Amino acid sequence: MFQNIGEMVLLFWRTLCALPLVWRQRAKVLEQFYEIGNASLLMICVLSFFLGGVIALQTGPLLAERGLHNAVGGLVGIAMAKEFAPIMMSILIAGRVGSAMAAEIGSMRVYQEIDALRTMNIDPINYLVLPRLVALAFALPMLVTFAILVGWLGGAVVASVTSQIDIPIQSFFTTMKDVVEVKDVANGVFKSFCFAWIVGIVSCHQGLITRGGPRGIGRSVTKAVVNSIVLIVMFDYVLTRILLH
Image (cartoon, rainbow, N blue to C red; front, top):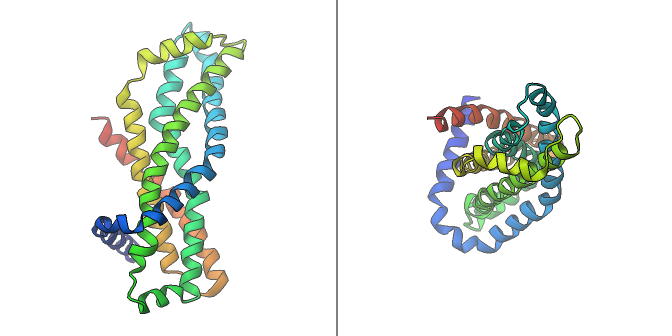
C-alpha cells in the first residue's frame, strides 16, 4: 500500500513537472476531452436530474409537515452544489473513464508498447498520462457544473408535481437563490477538480504497473475504480473540512 502511494505521488509530481509541455500534446488533450465530456454528458444529465428529484422527494414531505415548504429549494440547491453533484459525478467518471484509462494503458504495458515508446526516447508520462490528466481536469468540473444545474431543475420539477410538497418552480428557485451563494457552487467545482486528478493519477498508475496478461488488465481496471472511489470519499471529507473554514 505504501509503495503504491509513493508511486502515485511520484507520478503526480512528474506529471506536474511535465505541464509546460502540454501544448505539444494539445491534439491528444482535445481528443481525450471530447471522449470524456461528450460521451458522458447524457449519463450526467440523467443521473443528476433524478438525483435532484430524489433529494426533493425525500426531504420535501418532511419539511412540508413542519411548515418549512420554502426550505426545500435551498436544501436541494446546497446539497447538489456542495456534495452530491461533485462526488456522484466523480464516481461515475471513475467507473466510466478511469476504467478505460487503466485498461488502455494496461494493455499497452502488457503488450510492451510502453517499452517501445521508451526505446524511441518518448516519455510515457508526457505521451500517455499528461494528456489524459489535463483533459480530465478540465472536463470533470464542466460536467459537474452542468450536473448542478440539471439537478436543481430535477428538484424543482419533482417539488412542483408532488402533491405532498406542491411548490411552484418559480418559488423553488426564488427560495434557492436566497440560500445558495456563488461560493457554494465554486466549492463543488473545486472539489471536482481535485477528484479529477485523483481519478486520473490512480487509473494511469494502475495501468502503468499492470502485469500478467489479460487477467492482469482486469485486476488493474478493478483496482483503479475501487481505489478511486475510496480516495474520492476520503478526500471529500478532507476538502469539506478545509472549505468549511
